[in-house]
Image: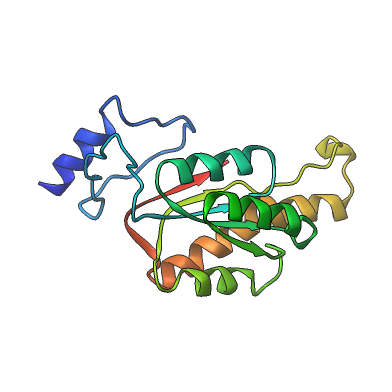
Length: 172
């Protein structure tokens, strides 16, 4: 019955899937409850990396409008803007370098009491060079932020059972 419900949701107009990557649906997947139209994320916790500006800030504001309590994460250099955003939406600011080895554990410690329902990996860097012209240091920086950090965060949250039932992980 759970598998049938998951498939029904996955094939419904409420589901958007745009990456082109294979998706595996198994009996372990739980279809979400039908969300209400008023504050559908009430009593939910969201985590947004790269939250201080641009798409991250807009994502934080939208999740908060939908009722979520948001943990806003960005680099220490963006701390003042990050704190202002968190205050504006009733969220929590966490300034840290996602490439630091302990960053995933620090994030997990902030989610220990609530878990996470929506995880938006928005943090990312670009270095304005083509791959052929990019030196090794810049390439390593891009990989550390854009790939390795999100893998480390996902792994720790999964290992500590902090991804709640029906949690959504979104990688931008």
